[in-house]
Amino acid sequence: MQGGPGGDLVFKSESDRDWLRSRRTGVRQRDVHVLLIEDDPEDVILVEQSLGKPFEPSHPFTLEHTAALQEGLDRLGKGDTDVLLLDLDLPDSQGVNTVVRVRERDSEVPIVVFTMCGDDDTALRALKAGAQDYLVKSELNGSLLSRAIRYAIERQKARHENEQLQERLLQALKLESLGVLAGGVAWGLERQLGLILERTDIALGDLGWSSGADRVKSSLIEIRKAILDATQLTSGMRTYAWGGEKTRGPLDLSALIVAASGFVDVIVPDNVILNYELAGGLPHAEGDAAEIRQVLTNLVINASEAIGEELGAIFVATGSMQVDRDFLATTYSDGDLPEGEYVFLRVRNAGRSIDRATMARIFDPFFTTKSAGRGLGLAATLGIVRGSGGAIKVESSPSRGTEFTLLFPALRRRRGAGATTRKRVNSPRR
Image (cartoon, rainbow, N blue to C red; front, side, top):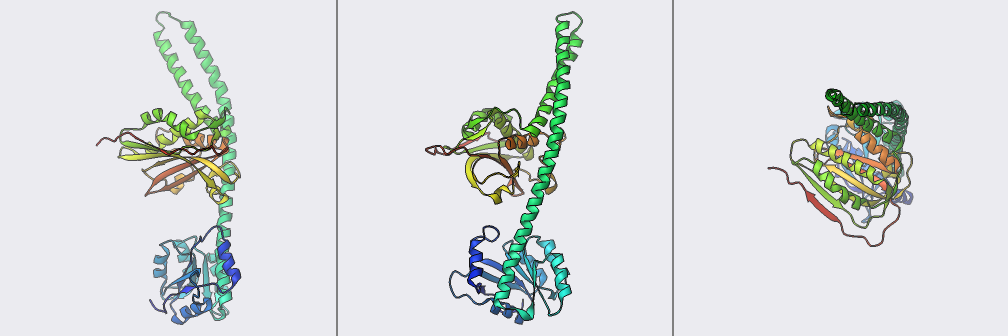
């Protein structure tokens, strides 16, 4: 690696420092980590001189520099770079393709490219390739460079927020259209199934204890059972579309989970450990107890199926948290929810993670990755949570498995927080 030693840097102006302190997202309360990919030692020194040397302990910038693109890409892989200063004439990469290669490695990091005087065409093509700003090397100075870094970070932040907004809009439109479809189909099917069930019961009643009718009665009983199974299917569709019948009231989420744990423990196979961590003294959430039990059952069944036949664990937790708009933007919800306190139910499995393609469709009705599944468990779960004015956040990674966090608006804080309850059941077979 060529060039002078990297140094700690500071903003020249007080407005730049105020900007750093005022940002709410992106780079948090720490030094802004700048990565410079530049092979010319004189240009490295120029960047250091343009931004200045630290003169106080609380300087907000740190600079790291590499002399080749591949080395810089490896450094980007650590994930702690806040802004990239990129030369377009490197030993192992030249021109706009340099930006393309960076974007293939990291789609989020803000990029400021360095160009030569009069090379506006390259600068514009670099912006189209994914850079946020460009600077002419011969015009570098402290004010210009610090401003370019600031604008690059803010532009990238604005682009990311716009993409999130577009994604939420598309998700809302998809959920709305699917909800109308599912609700209409469920309503129509329930009417027809009700008629078939009524006629089946009449036929069973007419047969009574007639001799020789056992085979007919057996067939009718099987038909009746199939109809009842079908009504559960339509009920799930209706729940997804309209949130189910509203018999809501204040709920103590932790107490509800404790009451339901007896049934939940039974449905978990012997190779899975079920752990509870239930917070005491939670504020009440509004909802229907039967619906919440259904949600818990759906999530635990999905979690145990994700673990499969291997030894594994499922973690069920409750608690409360303060939620802001940035957090809510990452959830599945029914429109804009208010910031504030929410009570949560969290179910995490230590099994397989969910890939991106599946994650995009997990709440679609009839979508399932299981050969015998109907694809309505998670769709109904989303309908129930949306009907309660809440949201669902899904996180999945190979190291932690998959975690569903269900958020319900807190009604009011109860006096006297109780102790957290921890419970562990089901010792796996060895």
